[in-house]
Image (cartoon, rainbow, N blue to C red; front, side, top):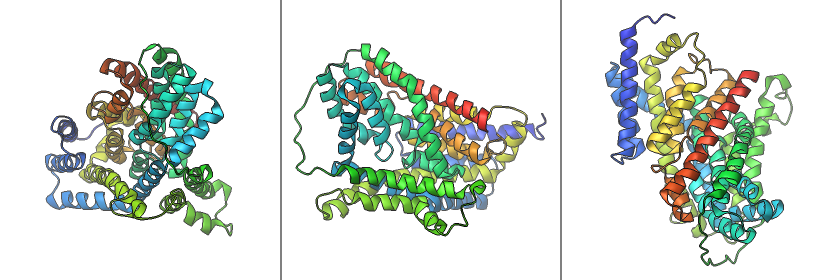
Length: 449
């Protein structure tokens, strides 16, 4: 292996490590919003590596603008869809029906599958809040350990939160890495489901031995009951449209010559598909008024939720552009030539970021931004390997959930767990999921890559 300029390469590595240290210190210790930390860290990296001022400015403008042009609206529509499903009661209708189908005796499986489905459109914290009262009631009725059913629910939610679009994190990572969204959905569902098998055993056999008492609060039932078929359509139709476009785009199938292709191409474009889902979700509320579409209504809430995610994603794009324009990609390609590190680097990078600063979404976006210029050097630039890279980063972004993760506190505070119990259930559970997922990803990448 030959590196032409070892001193220059070390400058790049030191600059990157300093930028990462600033990101972690700024978010964790100083509590600065991730957007500003990522922006400052990106510019710091640029100055340390000797980039010209014009290059740094170009990286800021191009990195933010080009990425937002690709996925800004996709993230926003995904958040709007989840918000309407949550606030209309549609998410609860889906959860209740799924549990009724599976049966109360299979409470762990019911909770895990419900979480797996709900976290695709609904943000993980909100989905747990929606499901917690139902989880309590069913655990008490079925005489099942509350800690076990909670572990099953939380891990089911986390699985699709980090691996299956239209959740914002995987959408952003796919956009940054140029992965086909339909493929990420298909493989994300498959791999996350397989990775939940050891998590199911953990929830049922290990977490269930931890005693967490159940305290039932009385909650007023909503007068309006949304229709199940509409709630399902709002989720399923966008996913089907995106996957259909991916299938039509496979060169081997030669489907682009079909008369229906322009329709599939338009409706299957992710931003249009998610907009269709948003329109379908508007059939859920009993009335459409400013409570739904007003600036202070559900749409306004969606804007407030989406804005920081979009800004953080844009800042991640700036970081990636800065790495690319600095020339680091060429050094990485030379340095890793002949090494089989492959998918391990994206996984470990995301795991370090997740463990250090807590947010899976920030870990997904930041890791994807760092890895993007290195894809060729790591041998991950083929379409299938891009998909696997997104999922490897998603797996890493679960390892591990602990005291600096908002979801950790949502789970512990709503269930009455203490910190030790949270670590035994949530922290260990997310470690099992992340390690299981990356092992499965490696198997698929080795066989099919």
